[in-house]
Length: 404
Image 1 (cartoon, rainbow, N blue to C red):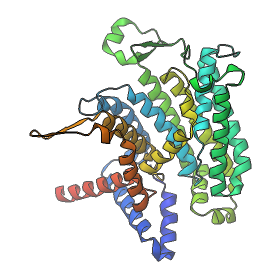
Image 2 (image 1 turned 60 degrees about the horizontal axis):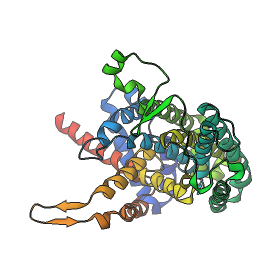
Image 3 (image 1 turned 180 degrees about the vertical axis):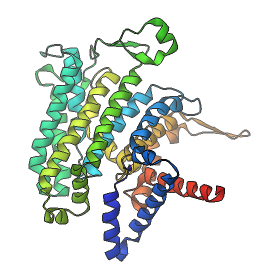
Image 4 (image 1 turned 90 degrees about the vertical axis):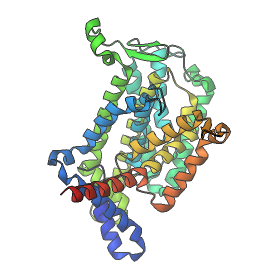
């Protein structure tokens, strides 16, 4: 199983054979085929399980890489990146695999975040409850809202679906801002006490005390009580579940609906029902990411419910490549890396002259927006990950041809 959808390739090939105006899609499919054939040099199981293998490698390498002095120089952002990747991958189950664009996915993330934060802190009249109870309630609310909203909106057409989800998210943002019963904290959000008893914070570093590891073991493996380890485990479980969904008959039906809904309906697929469940699963996994962020950020902030969060999610998904499972990984990593790197980058020193560019690079969204526009104009479905796979595949094949 690849990180891309072979069904989509087949459908694209069929479409391009009858439509001479889509030569760009043919080139894209050819590039993907080149990239996939480069894996022929590896054992079969590597190609079959390269998605979970890649996810494990990503978790293992992310933190040491971003902590390098010439990268970001600090490692705490690694946990945030993992959580956001899970969120964007959940969103992409709806957008990239089903073809439904939601402009209000921040509300699902917020359900998980506020559910966990309210439970952990006992905010307002709510009793103080374990994190898992609050997170479960948040995920359940997200799934119920996704199911109910999906039943009402998926049949209205793509444009109306996008704007109805935006309207629903704005309504949730308004309710949170009104602070009903003192639960959400209004514009201040929830911060005090929003941390489970099995997580300790010291100078911004989170440690997990679920297991009392003996000191000799911690001296050898100090990462055992690391918050990043727990986030990494939940990340792998969540991404693994999403991967199983997209490679299952259910996921293949979603791809068929995205490629040609009329044809899928003619084949007997209840397209409305599949869309509703895709929306439900997407909302539930988004809430899981939100619950993790509640611990990572020591509470819930109203800005995560805002329209900018939903917009950034769409941008990160498109930037990475909506037709690839690893598109979310590439999109979030580039987005977060550029945001932190360019914000802290102040001076270009050429030895004989130096330029202060801090003012210009503080508007990093403009630079990343230019990259986004280029990707959308050239190949909106492939994104950064599509280009990386194509060029790495070509380079690998040429190297192998020379060696042989």
